[in-house]
Image (spheres, one colour):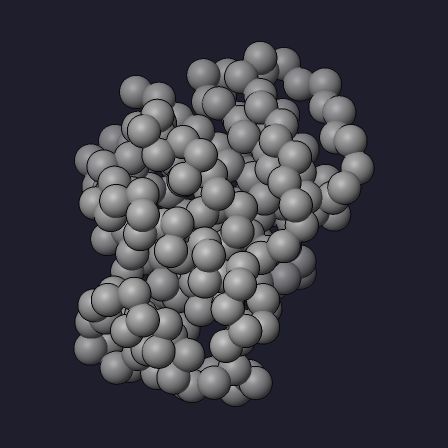
Length: 212
């Protein structure tokens, strides 16, 4: 069984505390979007640092990783953002969460992330007919519109966690061909329909549909 941990890094190095306890057989991919060299001293030798242009938030990072590695994906792929102190309640429990998933034989799971440091409960949103009901300045139909653009079928109602921390198997990712992810990436980085922040929100709520 092979495991990769994919980190979208921009300006928070809190994730290093997590890396200090990850199992040695995990391969760590850090996508450095900070425009500064990143040097780490870790016991793991399975560490890859890839410099990436700073655009498209974690959506750009995740899609680039999938495209770069589409034919060589690990069995299990863990995607997280760099500000782990905001989103992960307990690092040891996070490792156990991943191990429990590996043993479950399921193909995709979202981590029940908390939204900000100091909060203790994960935050979820429910999407009805592709429409979100959050009290935020994001078009209510933005998820529906984007899903329709890429022929992503939405259930009548579903609930997602925020903050785009999730685990997917290679089989689940490869349910779609590489061209599908290339189209998503092109739209995420070139379409002017929505701002990068809104696109990040949209994809937070589309990942579990894309990979399930």
